[in-house]
Length: 264
Image (cartoon, rainbow, N blue to C red; front, top):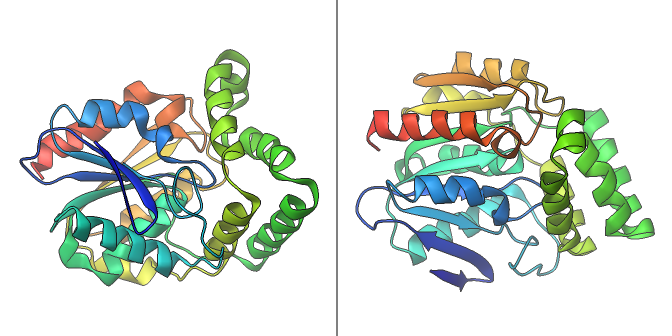
């Protein structure tokens, strides 16, 4: 089933009994990046995926985004679907959203899956890079930005031997407007530090990170592992920032094992 609430486009599949898992995509893609995980997770539990505001089929609005707004959208979606508690699974920007949701409304969580993400905020250097990216998108358009970004999130091996992955990601970026991309960059640059909140997250957590991820490296994942009370971590071999796409076999194995083990 597909639908829209408050301008946010979503899909809903799998059995209706049990606690759902909600997939939150990374920047600057859309929910289609979770297709393989939706298919597998949907066999054992209700699986939801949605397009973050300004991405995919969701409305762009005024482009004045914040992670707080993204969390508001997520909560509104859960309310609309009458989901009291869920397992949140977020990659990169999706992880930022999931972590802030866990901090703001811990009672809505049954579990947490953090993929190629981190709890710390942007450094000044990272903020400057995001500002430069906004300028580039406005000046040169989305295509040039998209091509460079795809190269940064995938391994050289994936780019050479699995061109379909790069092509799919490229198409998803090209489907977004300059307004949506710029708004998301602003939101990520201004996001809060959720590191202090990690120790208060009482639900089980799974951390997955690509072996070759340079954007949110394994060291960032290890820092979260040490701070979370109930967490396990797995490094996904042969993958960079898009570990769920570059090595879906291992990624899905760890994800499904976590869901089954915790019975959440």
